[in-house]
Length: 301
Ligand SMILES: NC(=O)c1ccc[n+]([C@@H]2O[C@H](COP(=O)([O-])OP(=O)(O)OC[C@H]3O[C@@H](n4cnc5c(N)ncnc54)[C@H](O)[C@@H]3O)[C@@H](O)[C@H]2O)c1
Image (cartoon, rainbow, N blue to C red; front, side, top):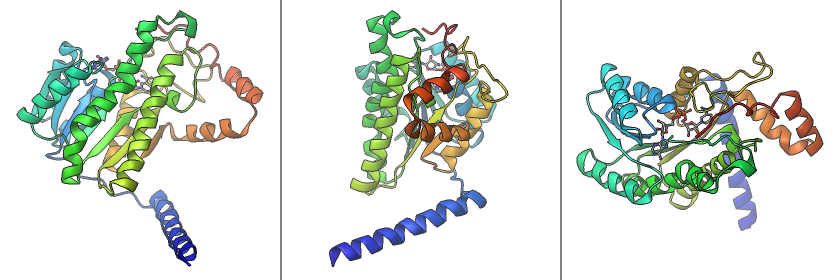
């Protein structure tokens, strides 16, 4: 009897959520108001972190900017203030260092308050073939791109759960869904970040029954400088993305509380495709698209 009731409830929910997701293809989603929210962005000193800071600034959020690069971070603070942000707090923080993350997090709680939107964005890339990557850079890549997410979430999630209000944003990568030659350490660290964010999403929803939201961002290559030298064989098919375009997509996805965000959206197709075609077909497709040589001129760290 329980099985019949359980299955009926599940099917009812499944159908309802299917119709809801179809409706959202036509009706725009409700966008949340971020005015007054305390938004912490790691890696705010350049690229996507800087542009996201500017978007949140123009929507009245209180900004907490973290970066290892103090000069870049102060410039972001200046730009955010120029966009109208009244409260912008910039902290130098090496996110790869657990003790430092916890120390600066405590300082933020004391000086600003409880963070309500946490954007784990700081990242690095070595951009070398597997056997050329120094061991310490493999470790560093994991520390910045994945481990730091554990420390920041541990520092700020308890208050979000307590208030039943908050949002965790993980900037992973398309390389966190598909392995890419020349990016073994980066890709593995981004898979780790994705795995943490997705598991935590399920934990918050199914175990904690919490209203804390999750957004996981997986963009293709962007012209921010991180992948300077990266090439694309068919720019009309798969161009390197403009950073303003990606930052706007991420900002909108956060406001709409989307969970999975692949940029550009049509790359979802490749994620499905790689599960169903043969490995030889995957290699042939990669070579056709120029993936075999796209990383050859990347400088990295
Ligand atoms: N650029 C791309 O093609 C691309 C593609 C997919 C995903 N991403 C991801 O987007 C995020 C933002 O990257 P971006 O393209 O803006 O690059 P970026 O190099 O402009 O920004 C990265 C920022 O992280 C900071 N940072 C590095 N190490 C740090 C540390 N230990 N502690 C604190 N801050 C540190 C840097 O100082 C820099 O300001 C990264 O997580 C990156 O992996 C980038």
